[in-house]
Each structure stands twice: as C-alpha cells, then as structure tokens.
Amino acid sequence: GQQVMQIPQYQHVQEGEDFTTYCNSSTTLSNIQWYKQRPGGHPVFLIQLVKSGEVKKQKRLTFQFGEAKKNSSLHITATQTTDVGTYFCAGPDSSASKIIFGSGTRLSIRP
Amino acid sequence: NAGVTQTPKFRVLKTGQSMTLLCAQDMNHEYMYWYRQDPGMGLRLIHYSVGEGTTAKGEVPDGYNVSRLKKQNFLLGLESAAPSQTSVYFCASSKRTSASTDTQYFGPGTRLTVL
Image 1: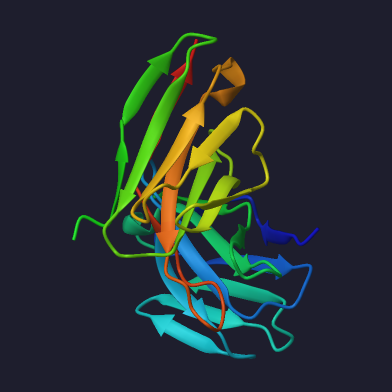
Image 2: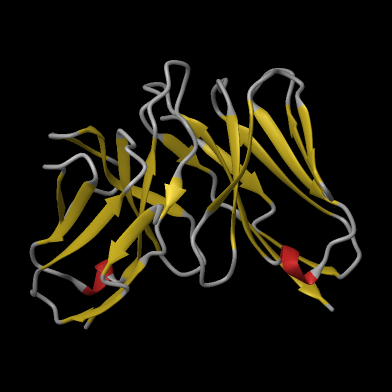
C-alpha cells in the first residue's frame, strides 16, 4: 500500500544549529502537508505544498516539494527551544478521502 | 469557534470495560477521523467518515466501532477494552475540497489507560 516515510526518526541539536527532516512517498502526491506536535500536545497544521518544485518559507522554516512530487523537506535555520516537537509530513491517499502521515521526526534541542 | 473538542480528556478503564469517546467540531467539516498515537510513535488511523451517516475502516480498526449520526459529532467506541488499547486518541476534521484532501484540524486528545 501507499507509504510515507520520514527520516531521521530523532534529531538532537544544539540551539542555533540547523535542522532538516526529509519525507518520501511511495507514490506521486497531489499535495504534501506538514504538521508540528509539541510534547504533550496535538498535531497542528503548518503548511501545504501543491506545486512541483514549490518552496515556501515561514520565518526560519523552509519547506520544499520535490519536482516529482514524491518527496519533501522541512529545514529550520538556527533552531530555538520553541522548535522542540515532532514534525510530521502527510500526503493524501489515492482516494483523497484521508491522508497518510509519515512516522515523524522528533526534534530536541540543547540550550 | 471551539474548533475540535474531545470528551473526556483522561480515562482509566479496567480490561473488559466499554466506553465511548466523543468528538465534536463546529467548523461544518465533512470529514472526520479517529487516530491513536502510542508513546513515541506516529499517528495511526482507526476509522474515518466522509459524511454524516457514513464510516470507513482505517489502518487499525479492530476492537473499535464508530458512528456519525450528526455531521458535527464522531463517536469512537471500545466494546471490551484491552491493555493494548492504552494510547492517546486524537480526533481530527477537515473540509471536503474538489481537488484533494484538505488540511486536518486536531482535537486536544484523550489519554486512555486500560489496566
């Protein structure tokens, strides 16, 4: 079946360092979505990418959607303690009635 | 707008007991979902609904039942709870679009422990 894979599973960085998580789908996606879940919280939508090769920025966060629309990345520049949490990518399944979540990348930060 | 709310926030059950988790949304969304999240793990889809009166199985439906009698509510039932169902349960909703699946809005979660 359709799968969405994310790497790495965990990343521990020094505050101020950059962070990147990668997302790969087994099938071409019509869009890719990114969510953030703070420790003890619920997933919160960050952004949606639709176009091949699309790049979007939210302050220190840069999101990319691959040319083939099968992969995506989230890059955080100069991490801060507020960036701690788990980042999930997600893409619609073939029926478009639900989305498939990646396994997530948990980011922890040393102050 | 309250968004997506879930009741209860916490619950402890004994093995074999039953319970119902309630999810309510006030955004007039067509689609609603139930996920479970085990410690340090991702989200696994239990059941979902694409409209009032319709439900479908997700990735891990066994041991759970759902109902969507009203558009704004989505109920998740555990008929005979097992320790393996100890988890955090999230409800989510999204609106229907002509193009593709829209973004999901999550509730705060229900932390369930089965002893």
